[in-house]
Length: 114
Image 1: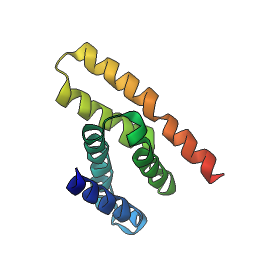
Image 2: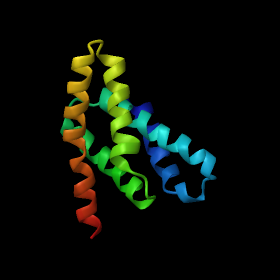
Image 3: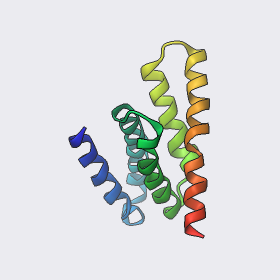
Image 4: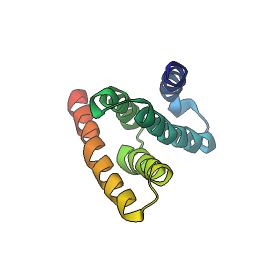
């Protein structure tokens, strides 16, 4: 997990310079954020352990005018559901719960910035 966390911190630092990245490469960074959310999910034990990471991601998204819920959160939930669950009904239930659990991070982030 330590190696994984190092990669996550590096990507978070990279995202701070998101606006300076050429537009064609920005989509790659957003995709990496999606994969990062999945990696955090699989390498942490509970929601409380994930919140600070996801708040960081949400904050970076907000700063860079990236739609956290639709561009990062939902694709990450889809990715996790499809790689961990075979039943479509379970996948949809997971995604619904995932969005419910972690979209609140975006509202917390917005409150801190106002």
